Image (cartoon, rainbow, N blue to C red; front, side, top):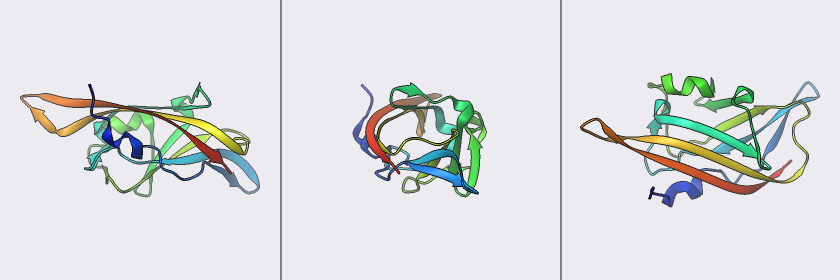
Length: 138
């Protein structure tokens, strides 16, 4: 059984925000935190998926924003120098014309992540964090 104690911090308590540029709503964003008491390099995130209202969000529409930089989800395995401090939220931006409707939405975040300091004899502890919470879109 995986260690689940920190899953409660995976999805930040902030609202989901529609993102508007020059009067046009181009998508929405929300925040997540690394679910542990220690930070990690982004290369330790083996899988990261999202669902909104039960519908999978295609990885091709997602940008992972951290430390003032933007990353595609497919780039995370190569980010062995980019550190995700445990208290720093990452912003997840989803490109979607018109954004999402105001009101309550079900947000699911699934993360499979390797714990780097457990690599004894080449075997690392790999955890799954799977959290669904209701957030308000504004």
